[in-house]
Length: 309
Image (tube, rainbow, N blue to C red; front, top):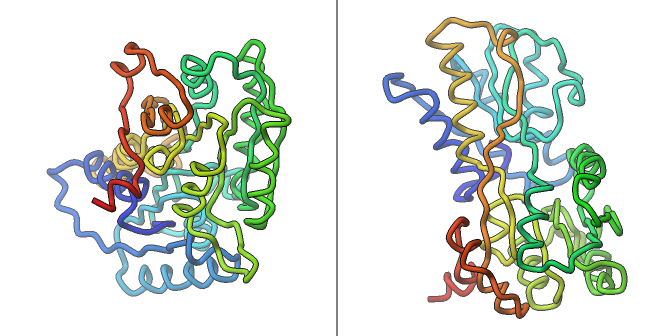
């Protein structure tokens, strides 16, 4: 797994993978967590990837399941066109973008964000939103996501991307967020795991999101359930469970049905889940209609408030 556990995104994908593989498949698992939120530099990711490959080479599994782009880049790529079947999920970049198109042993599931749906959900609560600022760290897998957002904003009448800021430092991030009310009506938070403080240390995303809640009065969206628990107002989230289920079904096709990975197409999951943070809505003075509350998953408090109880 590219990230760590416990974490909703990681754990949900793995649980979904087991479900998709099927209870009748008596699988034995060995899990390696690259933990790239804490090992965020290219050098650290490469080192963690080497550790994962050592574990694979020693254990000699029948199939490797990999979550997210860091695992594809630092693990899967080293086994391209070998006899080891690899299935991935949570990929923001295609196999072509990973320079792995046409490999005989790798297939998986793309992660495509529900941008249009998330903005529409936001506008049911904040109908005056017209200008959206996008802010992101410098991780390599975000440029394709940003391009998809640019391509799809035309589906939203009267909505424009007011700014796209790709930054490296936490101070830059804070400065931009403070100034967004001058140019934007809402903020889309993309990558937030790699901002560095003045000592060069990665700022924990939980602390970053709490700072946003305490310092930004603009409504906000993102694409993942964990972000909503840590204060983002709304999202039609990418379902980590569906990502894992789809990957598990691919693994089943390989292990049980005897299909070659190269015959199994790499496609995104399409099912999203609307989620609203009611605590953030109240803080921003936003009234959420009962129709939205009835059709969405509702988070009633911030994660840090829940943890303090």
